[in-house]
Image (cartoon, rainbow, N blue to C red; front, side, top):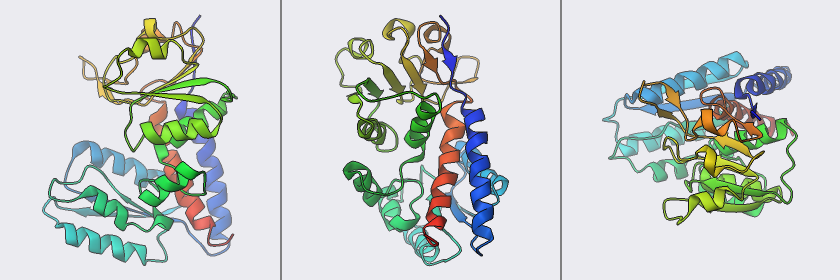
Length: 283
């Protein structure tokens, strides 16, 4: 069997069409959802990500502000910019692109963002809301993964999900979201003794460690759903994920590709979070 693709590009187009319609409805009430993006330094990957985020805002009719600052920007200056954006009524979401230069405490900057505008879902208040099942902003990448599972009608109740990776950005929130849908969740990481033994039990596998071929065909139960969050380069310099795609697609039931899988969904969910932040003003 060959796995069915979970097409992140196609799903993103559907969701963004809905976002555009809701943005238009808000504009009719005098509110234009606004996202502010702060980029410090000239990290090439960050520049690409930021450009894509700003373009997504434009495509859906949102207002976007891009602030570019040199890597020499001080921590206090950055905190002052975040404070100003917190008080700016035209801005509903604030995103500080990571990584930041070494002299800036990224966590301190994230905590300076108002939880009401934390559309990345990285603030401790957002993490606490997810942990306790309260309303809040979900981190965009795992949120996108959940939408991908939903799009193929996959029922998580009673299923065994294995998350490979324990980052605050993907692994941990991913596990909590799966748990909320009544999946039984195992989190694997660099300290896991026998990763293959874990993944072979899994109905759903989310690979999110940033390491090529961390998941191969012999590690996957036939028919399992595999979501690949990784972003790596192969020997030819082409973009690839954490999963050995060519091998695993012959075993899995569903699989997300790289590129064209989780990546576009991450930006789409950022648009959804920003829109919902603005919608709360008229709720």
